[in-house]
Length: 448
Ligand code: 0X9
Ligand code: CA
Ligand code: CA
Ligand code: ZN
Ligand code: CA
Image (tube, rainbow, N blue to C red; front, side, top):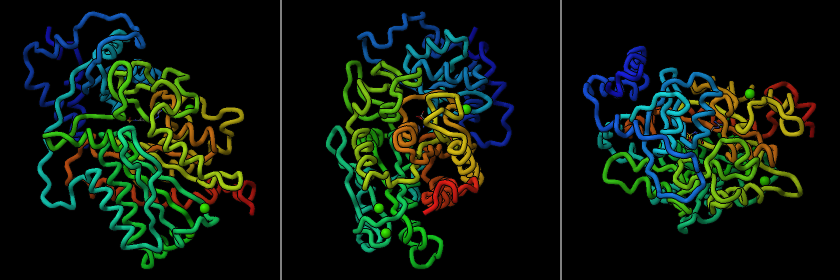
């Protein structure tokens, strides 16, 4: 029996007629091409291995698969618990990036795993302005924005990566050299190296705020009344490694580039210090896409980000009122917590705090068409950015998953995809003074 006969994937693909999810179309093409058992079947039919995630062993190589069967959040969390990274969630199946031992663990759960087709090579960009920024180009872009708008834009370096690259950002505000008493906003992108659209979203926002200052009244007010910190590539080693590739797409790299006992790379979005490793939402296997590191903040990049947030405590008060961590590609607006299914947690997420997160999250999603939900409605994770920023500092926090249909949308898609979330970023920035405004409780929580 061929691997394809063993799975409903081909039929499931046919149920998606609108072409919105190109990977399903590729999957359909694969279905029609593969009529005989192939190497795929051999890859997937390996014997069950002992599950000894943290025992020493050889490095394993990850690739992307489509998993069919999981229908509930508990089942998605079972898949996440194997250590596989869940890249996208559709009714027709999960896209995951997994190593062979994780593939076997997913199969033992009773789900069907099929190799995903390699993404079609992206067409070469027709003009430079529509291609993805390299790390060097991002730095040049930051330098030129700052040079052109010295009153409102200032470059900062939060620290350095494992390999010694600068983790660069731009502060945008009026009187930018001064630390004024204005609500602060922190936006980071590209913590996962391959999620290439995310740096473009951050750079675009820097451009929106600086280019339209003084002409657009709303943007002028936001720049005057907020201090906005934007860091477009917070995982520079991973980003450079991912882009160092012969093809127009990348190396499918997610983590940083720090060696570990088994392989290379810590998942920075599992390495934060709130409930680190608590709940089956990360992996102890260094080869895994969701390797949590040897301890909280064991990755230099995590520590740099956390130190930056800690540095914004001024006079005993955390200045950052809103945090956004930009990912791709599942088209979601997510809020804390990710480590628990509970919507509210005594002492760390009150009913009003949850209601404000949810209300703002839904409003933002209403502007970009994404799906708003608590992080754990997707699957359980632990050690993520927003669990820490909220859990440790009560910074209202969101994760966006941009769209584009893959980690490497063709450069021609950048403008369209980035434009979708501009309004959401402006609203998030606006809410930094008092998120409780969203639930009509500013007088209770934000009175001067
Ligand atoms: O798994 C992640 O780190 C994020 N998805 S991605 O495909 N960009 O890697 C989402 C984390 C959201 N939090 C939870 N699902 N709990
Ligand atoms: Ca200012
Ligand atoms: Ca300030
Ligand atoms: Zn991500
Ligand atoms: Ca919940």
